[in-house]
Length: 399
Image (tube, rainbow, N blue to C red; front, side):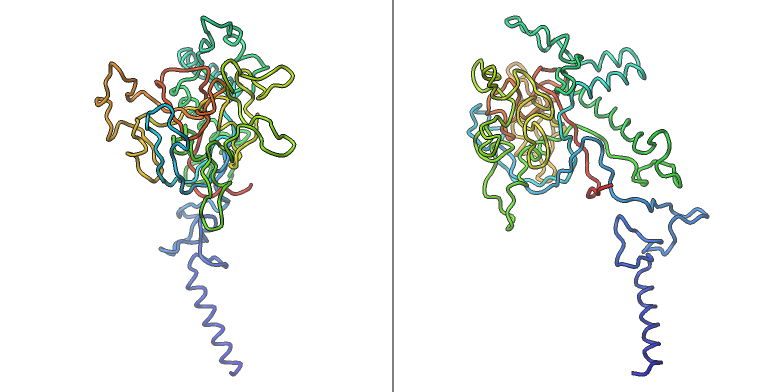
């Protein structure tokens, strides 16, 4: 082959490469992180100074909000893994797929909620502040002396990192909405200045707006609690289901230096909330700090015990039969209207919201992720708190 022919073929090859990569990328096709200099379908340049379509070229992947852990989605079998001792038949096993999402690694603590109350007190009305206050009287019991918790549990510094309780389903949603606004403002304008000075507009296309914080769906909560990623095999099979958010049927650490220690905060038996003085079995008579006990395989703390947690879902006995098998959730009475239930003998209505996880006052049965209970959205308890979740728009990247 002559030198002249080689030169011609080389030029033709360069022309082919340039025309086959209209985006201007040197290394392959465009993706969400590297879209190139111009559109692959119109040929128009991005970020033209004369007013072309503006693309945030500095986007390096989704920003992960504070306290959130990435939960990789996948196929899972929802439902109870133990005998249905309540005879409700409302947690039958069913295979579904859950999209990837984020979840708080801990329950929302008293300190987190006091931060919210302080902001509401400064920036809103007295009525809004009053409506946001947890009901501290949930600790009262005519046949017990729990009165000190009424005045101390929420506000005393000794309980700062204990989970907030006495909050309703509605209050939990209001907190999530406030948190969304505060976090997005801080992400887009840290220290009051725009993160992207070339394009200070913080809109969805900029990548500087996080999806909303919200309560997790019941399916998301159960999927995250089981953390079956820790049992994944090479052939995509999972050898066993998990009764609890850890392997095995025991409530104690089975091996290692911490062998014999409790894996969760729960009520071991009648009158036994903590064990003996000097040899406490779970370290807590009521709640414990939100980072207590080992995290599960997703890195989430207290997905069993400590406090039950509100979920987004409206309760129905047959939810697992009715909902979609992709990202299942029941947000209304669809296919199972409240009028079908006897108002005189049933608490099932559109205000009944699902909570899960078990608490410091519950036996082991309720610590299994498949179990489910419900309470009116305007009611509260000393055994119910919450944590937030968030939609995952793409895979997270380290920053």
